[in-house]
Length: 385
Image (cartoon, rainbow, N blue to C red):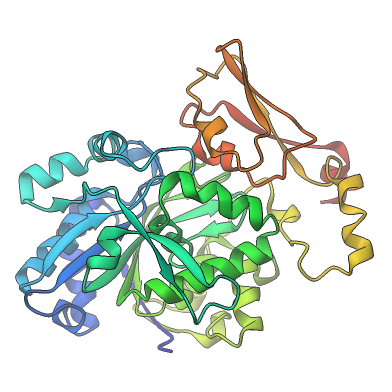
């Protein structure tokens, strides 16, 4: 597959309407990716309701600029995504997300269409190495093509989230916990993401790294100004570049390791062709990585007898999610997102996590919009790492 990654500096979102056409021009223009009268889904990252300044979601200015370019090419753009695992995929939630993340205002100003359909269909994925069937939201299935508009963020379960993982949004919100329940190990979860990304097969992937996220992302990290927009026809190539920017070593990037085992390319920095910036200029030295970065190697390659020992060391050698009762408002998003039913709502006042049932998928942390789920490192974890 194409290993080219195009990079353009964009210091502020007010420049997006100018920078997106410049980036596309380097790649042959939007007509290289969308024909006249085609329906094109702009698959955004709309994890949960959050203002654009929090860097949780794809910025509306990036989507507006892409929508304008698609319309100029004669295509019909539609923004679509399903929220994260703690939220229902219904019109009320979509409206709340669009309003909070600024897309409502953009739609009213530019006419960019926002998906309000909330149906999904089970589809066959015969080429999948791990997963042969997925439930996918209808707008993606009905579109002529998909443009993947992801956000560069750290991720407490997968180390980072970018172009490949953005495909997980085509699974309806409350269906997502089931994948975490079945695929508890992040090596198997990475295999599922690769299968799903291959199924969605975006024609183009654009990464919003103007204001990225560092720390304990993808929902509760801190915004970090990177000042870049990246693009590639290969989602994997885009993730290689993003991993280098954040300084995530390849042996901590499970997605790239699993892709390499499949013979997919590129999975190393030397395998991509970077256009617009020198590779030596990519890495940000002090980019803050997730607290879980040293616990994310996965269990997929361990022999069976070592896997049997994992429960003995789960509390001592992993980062444990805990509820901050003072911050918790008992909204229930963590309860809804937990694939193992390890969270209870006590007296309707706050949530509580059953440590014995917790599988360390961190969905609760990802979904909490009140920063009420904290990640606690044990003494042993801190000493070893």
